[in-house]
Image (cartoon, rainbow, N blue to C red):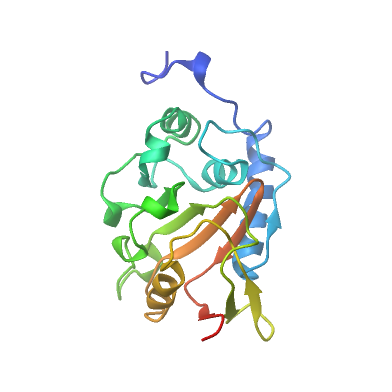
Length: 204
């Protein structure tokens, strides 16, 4: 037992933590720099349910003992909290405003983006990064993206998001440079939706 954790029940992390986390970090930065493009992770271990491979890889790469993490009820109900504490050492918080990172696996039941820390004039970079797990990155409601990292515009259609999600994103991004940054995760794919984006729903 370590920190009250039954090691026999802990899923493995990265086989090569240093190199694998560097590879995933580059993929995350690529996704954020090119919003709306699906980026595949080839260094994504199998995390405990309900986390997808991309969600778990993001956590293993970005979380540490200095990053308070908020988890939705779907994550809290399983073995993922112990897995995260063991591999990342991250403290868990029940307060959305205190979270450096938030992981949502049930988007329809999750809090609105406005519930998380949008940063302030002194520390806009201390806002929450919200990782939202979805079934697929295609086949949902279409929206058009414009902004840094996009030549012209880009259309995306992730599935499984709340009906008012894109309105939430538009409201969040209208306050730039404040606001949360969003990463969508599905399977071993991820997609960056930074606060610098401009959102236009299809038909608008």
